[in-house]
Amino acid sequence: MMSLILLASCDAENDGRSPYVTHVRVVTAEMAADLVRASGTGEIKARVESDLSFKVSGKVVSRTVGVGDHVKAGQILATLDPAEQRADIESARASVAAQEATLRMASSVLSRRKALTQTGALSQQELDSAQQEYQSAQNDLEAARARLETANEALVQTELRTDADGTITARNVEVGQVVQPSTAVFTVAHDGARDAVFNVQESALSGTSTPLSMEVTLLSRQDVKAAARIREISPTLDRSLGTVSVKLAIDNPPAQMTLGSAIVADVVMDRTDRISLPWQSMFSKAGKPAVWVVDPKTSTVILRPIEIERYDATMVVLRSGVVPGEQVVVDGGQFLRDQQKVSISEEATQ
Image 1 (tube, helix red, strand yellow):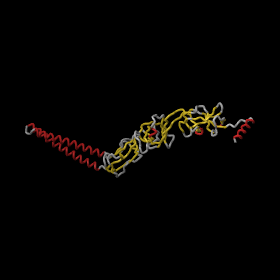
Image 2 (image 1 turned 90 degrees about the horizontal axis):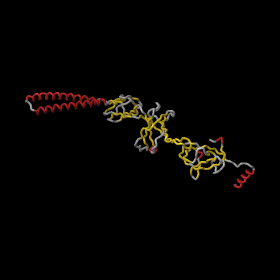
Image 3 (image 1 turned 180 degrees about the horizontal axis):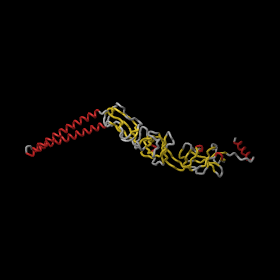
Image 4 (image 1 turned 60 degrees about the horizontal axis):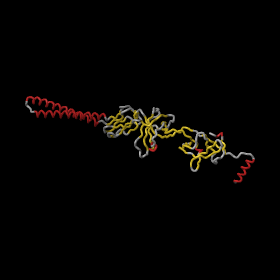
């Protein structure tokens, strides 16, 4: 076989014909901005949320709102049966009236004993006793009035009101249910600033560099975008997921970014000028990545080792091995050898 090839070559030379030259397609290496990006999906949430609860126990007799309803500050959301609180108020009022009568009696006794003490009919000890009884009656009246005030406040607390304008995002009560103090009944997302909340793998936060830019986009509408910035990184790890909660503050969020909307964050971590080549240009030399580079003076190729920074979807980003302006073979390099002459297919050259 080798003899036939040599004979064919000799025949070609004797006939004056040029030996066969492999046609290749090439790209010219160029420096371009290499953006290191990261992305993730999250959710739009209110920056401020509050859990609303009754401060007294009782049976729920009415509920006026549900999840998704918009509410105003001071609006009544639910009420408890006030029968117990009203009974406490009546009892406290009766106690106040009784203590007022006791104080009047103690005041009258004190006045008489003062007059008798001045004439010498009573001793100072008896006057001091009357003074103590009067002071005690005053203290008892103050305590009774405080109990009445507490009872009135308890009656007010049978009405659950919002603390700010917002949207109901959670409801944990139904009419007829008995609730205990401090049990969360509603969750209200306050109107105003919005955050994009993400659960990020802990390893993704190990770097110390600050992102160059961040943008969030609605998952359902790619044309709805807004700039964002890191506002808070949770110091604790969700052990069940191995993630950390990251909150991005959204600058001037579009109206379409409503509470609960699914969003995608596009984060530019770094920007460096690098050379990128198509996947098809990749070959191997001694088990390491390499590319065929064309020498423009001799029209021959050489298989040159390269260092790869990373792999993208359609391109390979190089760290070193190729300089701008060099021509790299991207098609036709499967059967090349070092120092082999090639011709560049002009119509297919990029």
